Image: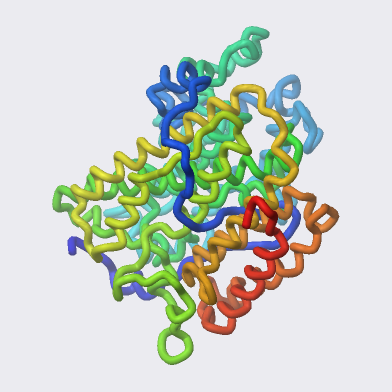
Length: 514
């Protein structure tokens, strides 16, 4: 293997995923796609999608210049000062107006590079300020913790840094659209035109929004938060868009216009597709770089695998594989369980959430998963080739979802959350065993079912009784106090999860779903 690791860093490789059960907590489920639909465009989408080459808009970096976020802060624009109100979006976002326990984390993204954890990470990674810049000056950190790298140098660089991930980080570099978006003609432009012609990310479109989020929260060709960073103390990037939207301390500067059921179901479906797309693209970029011998690009990259398949207590009853129906070769950790877990159910049900969209078979994705699970060190050239094909397959699916969303959508049918929850919980079980005992697979199933529970109204909704088994699953998945991993995740916890998922499966069962 071509790897270069620092021993003092490796021993600290324990990942962190924060979870909470509350109204609005959400995420995905596990399993391959079961669909009779071919992975082709429906006729009504042919013109909308075909013209874009079966790729969604909003992916990548727009070739325009950034403007400081203060450009949006005039009282007549988005700086009205009434926190949480329309016309005060900048005021709501900025950290100066946020109590210590709330706010928008993006506004604090640069300042965290000075805290003790970041300083310690820099020391472990060799960011000493001599051979390698300190974290607050290091491009490897700044590409996600600020828009300054995308903005380049110049007199405004210090301003960009101080703002962290400012307005342009989510809405696109503003140089070309900042004046245009104030004109009456702006509303008449299509979302695709706003992106392609002006570099504006139309965040009201969930596909464009989530793909933009994933560029940092999963990674891409220029943003690669790898295993060395995790080992040094960086939180693991386990991106679940619906869960992120529901963080209780995330003070949002916008209000979702869609009804709760529509939003929760659609953001979950889009989240599974976009997260997997970003993970596949990141694998492609890593494999492509690994084709040329270079110690800066180790292969295989451990952060692409399930952390807890390696980082677990071993010996005696602690071994968990006996509770699982999924057999894996010894020493071969599963690839991207987190990103793959909900894709099957999302693909099968996407036509209900987005009418007119065909359920994709994701055959190339399945081939890629098989290749990544067959060998400890798969051939990077073969991986890059197949990952590129899988990315194109996912792009086609996302383009269909995006085109459907840009049309006027009908409300999501009332029974959809129940159906999705039933599919998730059913496929997490296999006879008297769990389909997969991996923590990531089970956490994703929990989050997906919790998302659907929220879509039905949560504690005050029609499916309030789901709350108790969901809480018990959460209790079995929760990290022990003082730990940043499921260090005591063994047979007792798996037995609890099995029983509660079985209860949820039966509770959510319908004649169509069984």
